[in-house]
Length: 600
Image (tube, rainbow, N blue to C red; front, side, top):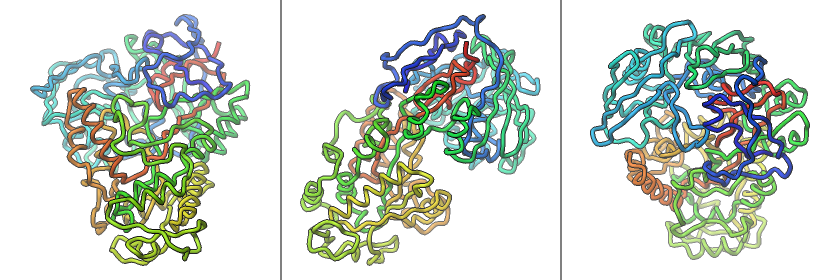
């Protein structure tokens, strides 16, 4: 598999296409490397005039888009399409993804002392219906979002005090307080799709708006669709300013819905797909890598997988017990057997591609065995010596789930008796590991199965609890009805890693007595002050230090076990070239679709 970037700021922004790189043999992993590393194999370049124009690459989707209103839709299939229609002020720099490149904004400035800033809008852009794209649209977008509530960008614009147009292509703004990210893509104040004023000014209730053919200002425009089957966009090469990119080079894009990863992989094998939008599992990748017509891309992740603990319940109310569970988790089995080396064991809720923001060392961890394999006596000794909320001892086996020679006691009681629900009622039996069934998530399910086996070997009675993925959210986020829950985030980027999104107490229903969904189902609030510091610090060095302190505290408290940072694996055919690889893969960045072209 390849872990080489097929586009740099020079060859992407100066319109050079990049040729294919073989490099599949060995499936070397780049997951632990910094995105700044230069240990890559360069592809051949092609001058702009020699790039073969035309063609229609097919992007395979596993799910049907649920709509095309960017303020309310959150599914990835919809954004696969919307991100080619709508433009954002900035994007990640394709040469150095830790840096920011202009997109709708050509340049900008911000004074952290006065909290005032300005930006120039890139000239020459138009909406897909022919209207001019300028500062009116930018000013309208941010003022509209500031006035509305409940939309997906409320957190981005929440710190804006004012924003106004000062010229046809200039804006000025003032923030209400210091913030860690202003122009940073994905996380900053301006990480918002720009809306056409002449369309959205007539939308009184954005929650009910469902456009059939969204109007955007990107390099593609809506062409046609077969609802639930395929969606097609037409290229607009003349609408993309030359100082941004000379593409798109293709005539159009088709997004084809397959309904499942198995069907998508079969479509790739049958020549129906040119790019898998979602990451594929290692087993699928290895099925594809030896084909002459297919290339598999191996990219470091921006997210992580985790197991959340319900801290309202005994024994999960004790951080020493939560810490001990890492000694039973099968890190080696997950990374080296199930992921076949295409992952890295987890620890902090920040992917290891963001190493400068991660702690330099553990306070008292790591809370796992050195080999990543179970050591029964090490885990038992850790709990026996723990100075936590409960006392842990070992006695004769009483529970049918336990396969080891001893069974744990919690304050002198069997765990099955001491185990409580959210209301404090004891006698809840073995602890439950909620997970997606193996048919839908085979790798995570097998890792969770081994985790449960290991707990029972140690003497902690545990059971698997497979539940359909669409039934998990209301049960976990709405009712907090779980012991342990396996889930993950596709991307939690710097500088603040969305720590306040799911690890701050304001995102929790601490007493579990409210019906609304809460993204902190663990009931965790131990690092609130540190998280708030991360989210309110603009100076980069101070920000990095704040991040390290918050991540370190969270790891010690262990509200969730970060199990891995799985590499993102995408497959492309050899029919097209010029895909742009960044942390997170080749499919979820705007440069790929502007830069892709037919192979020579």
